[in-house]
Image 1: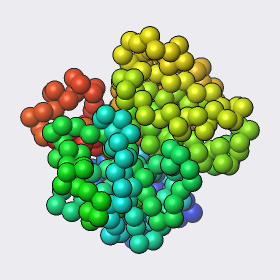
Image 2: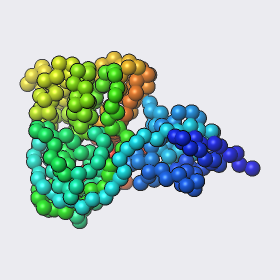
Image 3: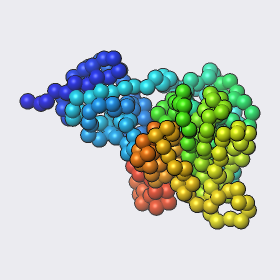
Length: 340
């Protein structure tokens, strides 16, 4: 006879067989948990594990679990977070801007504003092209425009989508926007310090979080470590100059390649300049999985809350070895970078 486990979710409860997938058990009991991909990528079904144990579906350094991957192995107490509903909207490409040699700024116009939390992401499908995941970002300069989303897309020479930007994908191109997804979004009302770490176009969601944090409490201490592989790819100057106007903000720009241009931009990895963490910190990180995983581990050791958004290359299976060497990626993370 199979063991029956009690699952408490928010103010309700249901029973599940030991070994069953948490998402399936919830749905069978009439609990409408948000979900989408069922592969532990989109993050729509993430829940906070307060008590009990699950098998699978966990993320190192976090108490968040993926209901579509976690199997019930004990009584559980879980908590959901209030997030906007996922929608699908028709849209159009409004503008393309070259932010760096390998980064394109994309503006997309929607028929109505999308309700999302700073740090969440969307799925974009340009008509005639495969679907990709990108994070809306706060404008690098100026104020947000109603009904307009801005994205930072890294361009790859052989990318199925990114290589078409400015060629087959131009202003007026039709786009399907689905979202929002993801749980690495801004949490308001945090009294302590906020630490942000971004690598590459992982800057897009972290810049949104930074803007929300400053808007909520301009006097709160905020440390922002911003990294790029090459100096010419460091496209974030305008946004960082805006942040630098606030007295309790510390900005640490980092590039991987050696240079002698300025001592203000340090050389190395973002982890080399991560401040000593404490239980009072709230940490957000977005970018390469090796970086986000290590930050999650360090935050857990320090007792700090941590929310990560790992970017993993979207490649054909035959290319997995090459991409693993280039990016240090790991299967199962949610954000798929455009590579092929």
